Amino acid sequence: MKIQHLLVLLVMLLIQAVWLPREAPDPSAGTETSAVVSTEAPTEEETEAPTEASTEALTEEETEAPTEASTEAPTEEETEAPTEASTEAPTEAPTEAPTQPAVPPAQTSYYPPLSPYASAAELKARARQLHAEKTVYITFDDGPSNLTPHLLDMLDWYGVKATFFVVYRPELESVYREILARGHAIGIHCTSHDYSQVYGSFEMWKRDFDQMYYYLTQVIGYTPRLYRFPGGSYRELSWMNQAVAYLNYMGVVFWDWNVIMEGGSTKTTKEEILANAADGLNRTLPVILCHDGTGMDLTVSCVPEVLWIYLSRGYTFRVLDAGVPPIQSGDWNRWDY
Ligand SMILES: [Zn+2]
Image 1 (cartoon, rainbow, N blue to C red):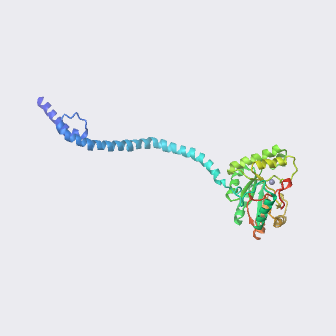
Image 2 (cartoon, rainbow, N blue to C red):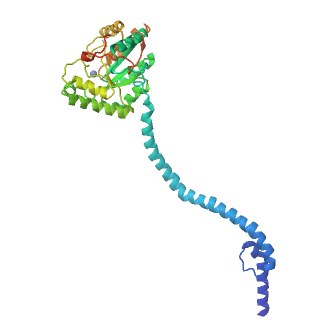
Image 3 (tube, rainbow, N blue to C red):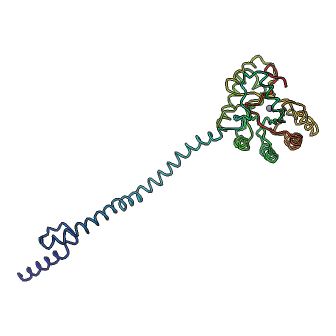
């Protein structure tokens, strides 16, 4: 028994002396002398190094990484990334997107903007300047319609820029943006083309205008600066001055025309349309009225020949803007063209 105990103790001491200092630094180190050499070296180099390297590596890289990778990665990357992407992207994109066309054709004028209070002499001088440059304006009312995309392609083919006075067609919302994307100008025509709805009173007209004004602002991302009264401003209404004052207040210029292709009628023949269009050659500053509303197929089909009447004579088609003296009729005609 005693011999066995002694043998066991000896074996244990040997094992402790040989193995323990290398494995763990904290053995109750019954063997100080043998352990001092073997504990300090290993504890600093082997245990600390491994503990720093392995604990830091493990705690920072492997423990955090795995926990982040395994717990946070799915939660942060998969949950936050989508939430960032889904919360920030949609909130930033819509706010940035509309501000991108902040310099739309209708608001960047070819020549410096004319004040609404510009004198007749100023307006005439500008008109003569544009006339000397053979400038012509083609405008399309009552769209967008299913004809508008085809019309835009035709205008592109000829490199011609036009002005569109649009009506409320939310089902064709992308067409409003397409008009701008192709470099044309866009203005308000009306929400409803029903004269009894638009011209019943100042309040009715204002409601019709406001609805289209705010709708179009939301769709295209900037406030429109051009307006055309449905049927033109050629009407004697007691509140017309009030409407014009309101337009001035809103920073909107209204436009009539001095060349009419078809009068909005589908009964005009092609020959009549072309003859009407050529009338503009006699104008100081031709502003041609056309229509691209539903059913105006004949007008749209005549557009290439109408454009050629002017292009072949060296005219340039430009968009209406604040630098062009407005063609206005009635009591608001401020200059004689
Ligand atoms: Zn119209």
